[in-house]
Image 1 (cartoon, rainbow, N blue to C red):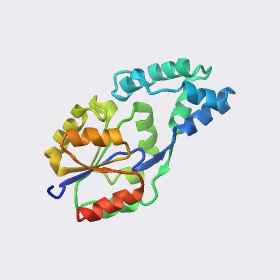
Image 2 (cartoon, rainbow, N blue to C red):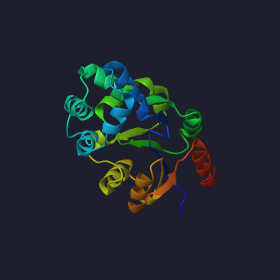
Image 3 (cartoon, rainbow, N blue to C red):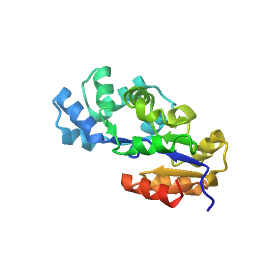
Image 4 (tube, rainbow, N blue to C red):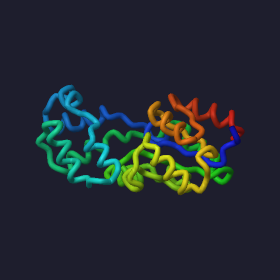
Amino acid sequence: MARPKALLFDIGGVVIEVDMNRSFDHWGKKSGVDVSQIAHRHQRDETHDRYERGEIDTAAYMDHLRTLLELDLAHDEMVDGWNALLIREIDGIADVLKRLKGTVPLYAFSNTNAAHVESFSARFKDVLRHFDEVYVSSAIGHRKPELKSFLHVADAVGLPPGEILFFDDSAGNIEGARNAGLQTVHVRSHDDVLAALIKHGF
């Protein structure tokens, strides 16, 4: 395939380390409910997907999550736990983005929601500033791996899908991106990012 004219990065798992267990631990400590019970009750259901498409607000999703997990916690405690899964930037990614900045257009595309966007935009602004634009599912109304999500981003970037190289840690999202015509890299570790950049001449 042709050398990519833009690079598109997932955020969670590629730029920022995430771990849902951190959320379970937070809620468990605040509520006194056994963490294993919280983890067992949790599921990414249609209400979760609606939240990530921006179809419901944070208050509505926290109410749903509180009921789903059977927790008696205030809104702020639910949100703090929800954001606890955002841990730290992936080692080495900032240096990679800094090196690439100005040599090729850099974009990010994340399945995420209003609460996480508010949190990571402040906490990780130094690494995120390297991107020309950050696209989030809750703003565009489409989630990966939906075909519309990738076509929306490609249109916004102003390039045919085949000229965009997409990095994501989810096999499902990679499949969706390929179906949309993007070039892809399934990221299992930061080394996969480095190897792909070398392969494509960056």
